[in-house]
Length: 538
Picture (cartoon, rainbow, N blue to C red):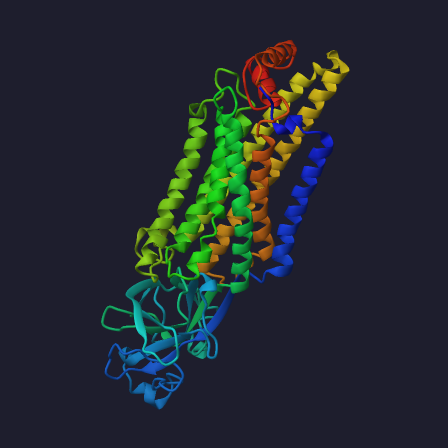
């Protein structure tokens, strides 16, 4: 057994390696803090109230030379002669003299209603608002609009009135929760037009109050942030891919088959390389509406492998020789991770999968009398996800504590050893403990990022549309993942300092290993791996 690089590398080289890793980590943070703009931009649009006397399906423009006939206020004399079905709310995205770009990656839309209180027209409890939504696009200001999507959607209307409901307070506005409206997975065109109708009959849109205006909040990723993000992926992708291939090549050169820990490290490298694939370069030239779903799959694969790796990484340093090196020994921990990942995947497919054909669909704001409405999915999902990952982290901390205690029990034998051997093992154990603490730090920051990511995505769907996740945190976490995976791959790769090309050399090394008081006869990637295996067995 040649031993891993973490044991064979000199202290000077190892310190230099750690220094460069920290330098790259700081650089990743500074890229987001100093170079990249904020990740997203939110723009508020006031919908124009257009008159559609003939109730045709013609596209109505809010401004420009072909703008529609408008009503500025529903209190105007002209508006009082109109039927509610004659009104179309028109929104042009973006604002005049600007245009959208494929670098924006996606576009979200949230509705905000201005509803005035009237004693004879109050908002009923558990009311549902029906929206006839249409979306069109074009790439220049002179061509005709091309219909892209059309759907009739229902959303629960949740409003509160801060003061007492009396005649004196008529005209005051309700405070209504923002309503998720649309999620477009690609911004492949320069201009978009939304035409919204609130159809009214005896059973539809009854008890929704007196609507005065509709605001549409458009959210998209900043083009500058997209360029920084893709550039980081372009740099890390070949780096991690080459390191993963190199690691597996070194493993295959060993005289023994790879152990479970080495296989999981290889899987970790593959998942990181999968996340690093800079396919966004191609998405800027093609209308790939499935990019958000693909990015979720990339990140989900890394989460799953990372969580499984940390469990196995700690567990392999706790179990005895008879139990370790078997995936079945971790069936319930890995099973829970796989189950959780599968639930997240199914949930993601149930919404973003549907968005491929209907971007107006939202599982977060389903009809008022469905299962999801009573469950309040945004709160339940975020709460369950947050509690689950926190419990996972506490369980991981307990496993790390047990590993340290196991190693501490064996360190009591160090004073009886020769000085050179004692110093060697003390150095190996110190390096392993440092790596374990770095693993805990990476796990903690990953879990914080996971929770904040769910909360910010929840804000897109059910409330605060001004996202507060800073670029520095995003680029720093992404850089940390790559640097951590590279560190594990590099330090746990077999060292080249001891070669087994000659039988004599192998016999000499084997006899020296048998004389060691700490290790056992089992083959493994590191001395600590073999030490803890013997301690657990004893």
